[in-house]
Length: 285
Image (tube, rainbow, N blue to C red):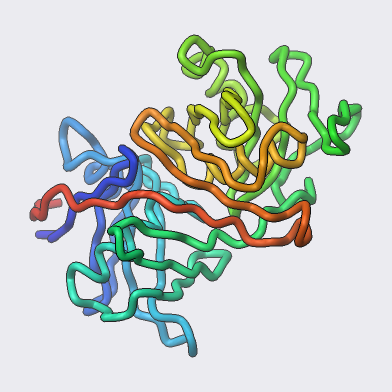
């Protein structure tokens, strides 16, 4: 089959975007892997599929697949590319749209400066919703929030969900942190039943951090939107950060805002950052 697509990127996190609003898209996991392969396909971190929505008040359906073919729950950088695509392709004239993912509703806002703000919803701290098996572990509390010790990995993790699972650890220097060796061990640790995104957070000051994320099913990416949200939320709850934080990823700058300590822990997280089209193309699968 011939498949038309658009290659996009948000802070270096890159995507293949497919418009399935006119007819349903059905690709096998093998075809997804071929599409995401950087040598034998187009190459990307994730594949984003735009679908029609029959749900009242919802503009589009939004499905996300890792480049290994697995469908995942959420991708913040992808959500920004989603709304940029919809606007650029004339699928909607709205500056703000609502989309349905596998497990959430997202509000996406196209700003006058070209950047995109995504209402990522509230963080989830219930361990069974992450999910994370804490049986037999005793957390260390910092500012009233848990840091969970994984003795076999010699690290402490803040654990939460942003619609997908995250484990965040603080490091002195992200440039020298063992992201490529420790990251996959955290990702596949048996206490995370559905695997986990492993974040490595360096705090520069209360409003600025550096971050690297080893993503579940994708490896290290240049930026991870939900990872940036999870890292900032964890940092706020641990007393390290203020409500508005600039996150420097390897691919660019994201701004994360969360008023959870003043408005309640279920307050939504707002993420603002760039979204750009790279090229349009067609591939035979």
